[in-house]
Structures are given as structure tokens and as C-alpha cells.
Image (cartoon, rainbow, N blue to C red; front, top):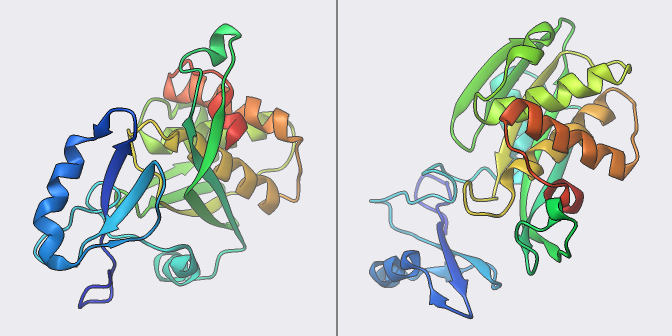
Length: 239
């Protein structure tokens, strides 16, 4: 629902048909007077609140930056238009929790919540990253990527870019703007969506390509070595 200042606010709810609604769903009751609107219906859906007095937010209390707003927002932050915009989806896992790294069966499904990354090349070797999701900025040089580990969201991108550089192909300095509708910490693979969208954007900007399976393995290595999470390949593969 659009607010008076032109922004949109949303309220995340998870409904599990096997176990009933989550505690978050109980909070919908106080929104009834605001005429909440269901945007999409699935196992994971969003109710949008028109209440100007609160900002539950889709991601950590932040207002949503929609994909079509990325170029203008990028220009406002970096003073020019992006050259590449890439995205990757989150996922739900219907069967096979914790079996992808034990050679078991899995059935993941991509969802309509995505992470978008807008990028433009720089003439120096800096990597300037901003996420609208948590309203944070990180500024690194390409030589600092190897040491930028276990430092939150920026480490995922640092790992991807560092591994692409190790691959032997050119990787320029970049300005990077990120927005996402994949909820953080909700088991929807927001980290893989970030890694894969960063890899796709970087490859496109550098004029390079990579087979999808190889790209998924590269993103998995980034999560292992830079984020410190010993995940399987399922999340990156589905993103």
C-alpha cells in the first residue's frame, strides 16, 4: 500500500498449511482497520500495511525499493546510471532439509522473492557497495577482498568477486547497489540470491560468461570461505 510520502510498506507473514499460521500472523489483527492488501498468495505471502505510524518493513524495517526504481536510486547514490542489473530468486525447500550435503534427495523451488543488484564499472580498483535492505555501505579495494571475511552481507559479495578474479579473467572496480524482497534469516536462501546475482552482474560487466553449474559452485565456495557457512550446493544451484 502506498503511503502519503510515496513509499510502500509491507508486513511479512508465513503461513504453513500443515501447522497453521506463525506467531507473526497474529499481528495481522491490528492491521484490519488499515485495509491490508494481499499482494501474492503462496506459502509465503505479504500483507501490505497502510499504517503510517509503524514501519514493519519487508526487510529489517526498511521501505521497499522496487526494481524499476533501481536506476534512479543508483544515480542518486553514485551520480550515474548502472550498466548492468541482475537478479536471483530465493527458494523454499519442499523436501530434503540438510540432505544436499549428505548426498540425499532434495526438492527446492525458486520463489518470486528476489535480490536485485545494479552495477557500473569504476576507473579505479575500488568496490563501493550499498544495500538498501539494511541501509549500509561498504567501501573496499580489490586487494582487500581476500581479508574481508565474516563481516556480514558484504563478505558474500567480496568472496564472489575475489573468486572471479582468481579465475583469471578481468574484474573491474565497481559501484554496486543492492535491494531485495527475500526476507533475511527466514530460511529462504537470501545469501544464495545475493551471491548468484552478484556473480551474474560481475560476469556481465566484465564481458565474461560461466556455465551455470560452475557459477553455483563458485558461489558455494564464497559462502564457505568468506561467510564461514559450510552449506551444500542446493541453494546456489536453485538461485
